[in-house]
Length: 234
Image (cartoon, rainbow, N blue to C red; front, side):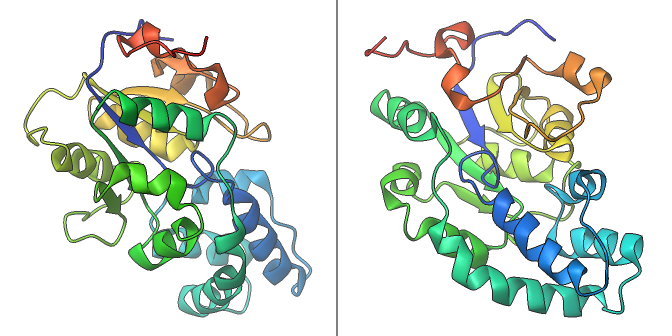
């Protein structure tokens, strides 16, 4: 892993990082695939994580050769998501850390590949968390996002929403991610990256080496290591 340096801006992925939504993605897609005698594997899921919606659908339909177009899969999947996303809750350590950054006026944003409509579903019952970001939320269907992860667009746009010029050095920006493609996107943007992967995910040692930290949970993050204010309740 790389040596951390002080940061001034913090950017968060959402699915599987702030909220326990990856479980819903897995459950819904597994249910759809089961009708065709297929089993959703972590090998395929890891390729889909963090990708733009249409790109992820193409990966799934192509790999499993199911009799659905990517568009048909998305229509069915998204309808099933409607009922489940509002029930998702923040992952351990998230509320405490985001509140801590807000209390100390550290510029921060959400940078998610989710479309704006999906973000609204996921966030509407978690306003104690998402209200802390104000309007600093960049979504995958925003006009500035031409390419999905692992391209850097989503994090460059997120940092820009916080006042960081697109052409600036982004090493003072800290990205939190759970997906390999998101980690690569953060690195491509020139940011330092904290990787908090799912326990089921096979980690690429070469990618681990490029991260500032690889953690099991947000609870394990020490803000002082990156020049951020210490927790008052330690």
